[in-house]
Image (cartoon, rainbow, N blue to C red; front, side, top):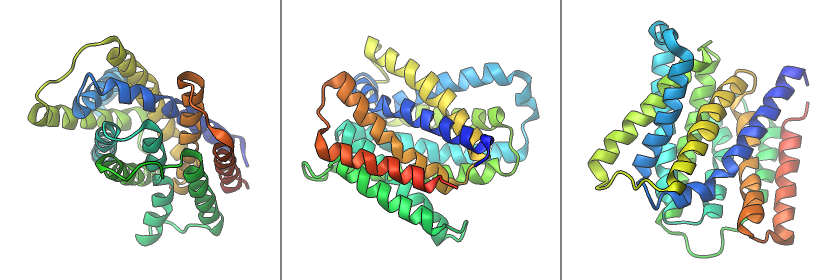
Length: 283
């Protein structure tokens, strides 16, 4: 494995760590802002930061960057909108598990649409990661509700985002302008839907502002830029497998900050996920 690929692996693990810490934070913040409003504000922060960095480059956007950014932005909007709505009706841990089903969806979609050949090693890793995720977060407690179903839709949206973004980054798009289009696409669609469907935009509380700063800067601006860079090096299946670590970090931070107890089976599940990632990314 060359150094550039190893750096991409480490970078994506860092992204999953950042995302893992946000589940409980976002669930709390949704008491003060609607799902569309929260996404609109989150991506506006990321969009403004990107615009500052891009500066005059916005006037040299290519057709591929605009079209690709709009396509990826649409899938990203669907993913976060459905995740936020789901979080209002299900637990943060179940949301983390179901969102990570995108790990399984990516190679299936790639295979069904004949986009990319999926190696046996990846299928084995996906199977291990899926079993590990199930054991780790044990979603059996309680019946499936609408929140869970919406979160499955979120996983599908994120799976298509990983695949479409992988497609466009291989076409040589510039990272910052490409993300700029995505961020404003999500923000615009979210604002529009908030105006139509949400009677109150937001209650400006400390927890909402804190969640917006963490998710807007660290979990969106920084993390998705890293993701775009890494996908120039890794294929969608490899990216999805690494993202299986997200609920591992979510469970870790729940133990650290919320006093949750993981238990023996939780450690077994987490170990299977780590094994799946190590095996899928070896060689």
